[in-house]
Length: 270
Image (cartoon, rainbow, N blue to C red; front, side, top):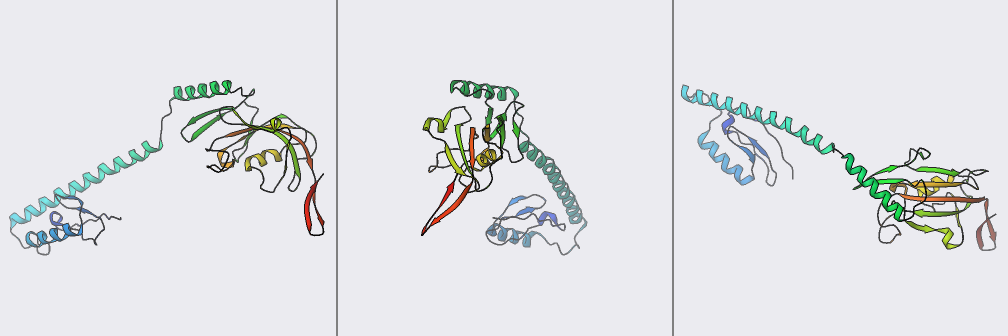
């Protein structure tokens, strides 16, 4: 539903603003400022016809003085209204945008996160997460690197050789953790490494970005922000948008090619 703000300079004490049915509007007059509907508008029109005559100024001096006084009072009321609103609305906007954070609360949340990580036997130099609603602050040692995409990583060991390219297959082990340092998945426990071709959208965006910069034999800790993480929902493994931490060990990088035998076709990597 829309509304309009209307100003009538002549005969302010009797000013009525017309509006179509169902549309709200604000009426500025000498003694009234509020919302009106179409019925109220008709009633006000009748009152204007009985009590107001703005087209003629040939009245007695008493009436002229009354109109002048009413006009002056109306102008003052409108001026005071806008002075108060212009001072009020910027304060509301600024108070909505600025939120003072208590350093004590942040320190308490940090200690709480570290305590949970210790209970979950998180590895050494594990990042800390200070979560306040949907806002999360990641605290890491200086050895971590943060990219423009939001991805954060730390090279525990730098391998040798070339980094993987699109179409190549990467063979790697990984251990996945949540913000509390609890282990959520591990190929070491499964007994076999993962094998994925790069550039086929088979990996989580943040995971693929992190493993692309690795070399065979390297070990890297990758911190994936929610915007680069997996989809969430009842049908997925992840139930909420959180940072995910992966310790990755890149074992090898293999070249792949398509093989066709009759009507059969597949990809072979070696």
